[in-house]
Length: 389
Image 1 (cartoon, helix red, strand yellow):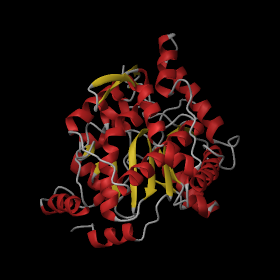
Image 2 (image 1 turned 120 degrees about the vertical axis):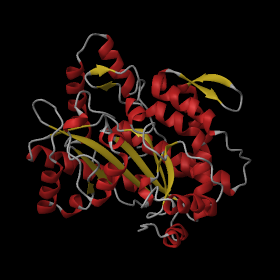
Image 3 (image 1 turned 120 degrees about the horizontal axis):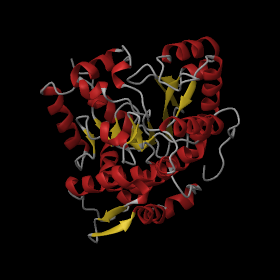
């Protein structure tokens, strides 16, 4: 039975407000001593429901019981969403301390055996595991998702079309998952390789051009039994049918709050600038998916340290220069909205690779990361949003 109401979804976009923001961050739930994944989501969730209603409604499960997601809810703008998320994160980390667990924020767990993880037994996740089997069970990953309200369903689809080309740049900047199965994977974002490149209907979507065309695609999937609900369409940028938002889902989870907030700020600016360009009729020709996929591989492999292909000029440019290009492109909207994201000189993947190259063990690299995450997201973190987040 279909769980997608396309008319209701269109109404959600008709009633949406441009520029509302929602932030979703996923954390690994860890044994405090070994830093192994532990299936403690239910304990955290139950404790939140017993002690803090605002936190309880903001916690969500993911595929495995050793993962927890915290959601800001719909902020009226970036500053509001960031302030909400900071408060909720701090409460979550305090709760984790009380429950005797730690939280990690890399895109993967560096050594956990996926075969030992317990899946969440909700109807949705049972469908995912039953349908995808190994592909789903193998996916023990952690990411950052950002929702931006966009009024009008047709416009939201066109905004998604315009954002396809920048997905590799956002991934390169956010790359934060070097380690897997106890090894240096040699990839900047091994999370993307085992999730985005493995799941069906995932990664770089086709350009759809209109709401009608996107609905035709969803209706085909429904008619052929390919999906039962819209959340089984995992594109790295998608119109979210329940929220009336454009959701960007390409980024690894971030080791520190300042990196997560800077990425969220840049994503909001990109979505709003794409909407502005569409409103102003700026010329746009959707590149072939195979070309964007070439850049996606470069981002997976080398991250921000590598090069991406300038698809307009057909030449390679440093990935950092591509980020500078996003900042320049979004300057009009960022100036209006007061968004000025600041990024560290070296991102998470580079820092991990530096330590591994110095001979630091995988376990010690992760221990250092977990300590930084606790310091950054937990009790000592900022309590209110600041300009530039």
